[in-house]
Length: 584
Image (cartoon, rainbow, N blue to C red; front, side, top):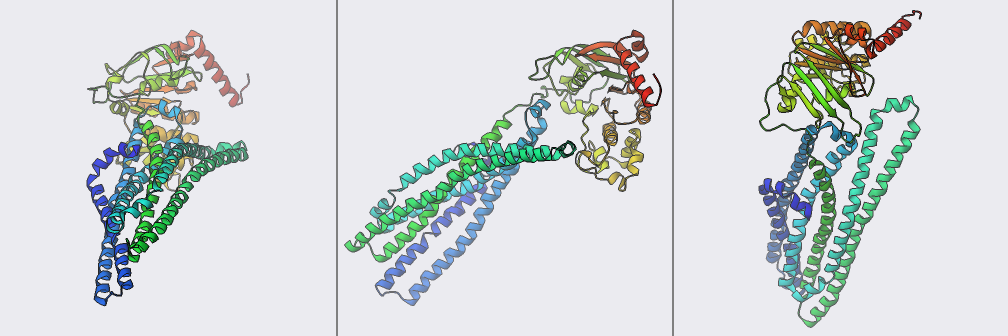
């Protein structure tokens, strides 16, 4: 019952609804006591030949009224209790989703999407069952079982009642044991489902790669193995689940045997009438459901216990990046000072950055070049405050970036990442993602700057074209330019292009850079690129090598140094010459 105590915060919020629902349940439990007693009275009247038409009519009317009351009470408790359980599932999903949005990138590096989805689906459903069917079975087993036992003992024969209850302690022991086994196995089953969920999501997302490399057969085999594991672990749960009914039914069969054996003796001795025995056996039949409900309760609660512990473990993980008390509630603007002595990503041994110092005045453009893994993206992630724990400081507009509210910092930065993510909606809605109510003219203007406007007009639906999941219907270059338009529509103080022009041709790249230069006067831009043509116009260029700055200067100054930058430049010039059919 631990999970019911853990959910007490929700039961307090919905105490009125649960109180009314429980009251309706108790009313049903009381009204259920009338038919067996009335049947017993009628049987005795028939046996004694004292039954009259008015008497029979009276009892039938009472039964009819009881039936109508039970009809409405049963409807009402379902609305109150099950309705509240649905609200709990919504509340917990919102909690999880809000938690996911506050977590840092390292959280997602350690966890799989499929597993997080399983928490928000299967685990939440198990919790909903606990707050709905769990409360129903708890109250129903106690109220119905208690009232039936008291009625049997008080109105019929207390000795026979005690005899009939002799097998029940064995049932309580066994169902409790089954419950402990069920909780352990259900947790394993949920974890197996998470693995399958993750595999499904990964395979669908990567279906193009799988088919390109001809790995459909191997992928299906992996899926089948995981699916078999899910079935196997759920079968282990089902085997325990299947023990509840036969155990309870078997124990009640013993109760019936004892009741009829000793009940017959009491009738012969004159301590009970035949009508009493009929009523007693009917009450004993009513007692079967509360005991079955008691078994269901262990089943439901242990499932809920396993799921709630999985959810709370996830919710207990604190966000690594949080706002400081009294954080500055305005968008930063001004000069940028970057001074990092040391930084490494969580759980990495090697330093990602060391001794990286540069300054960038407001309105300037800076280019960052270097080989893969040289530290370019690490600089950008620190600027976006996706990671902390570094030695040094990053000052933007005279204040360290951690003194700004995260929301305000990120509102000031338009970030176009290497991995472009477009939502499965229209092109217009993707561009207007940060401001869905923005005027269409602004969307068109941003698209023109990103050199994607003409491409969009060429689509059959224009700006209303659905791009598909992750922008699958667009080419790589079109995806990049839509992402650039989405960043520009924010009118950011700082625009970051993280190798975001790699999929466009040289002519389009030049047009985009020229448009940014003309329309972003007084605003700062940082461009990382492997292609030097994208950054050679920059006011300042830094060359990253093994996590530190190897060279820094303008395009002309770096060429004059005769170092790594010049080596990269000459190599790329050679590549261009070869592509254009030139000779070495």
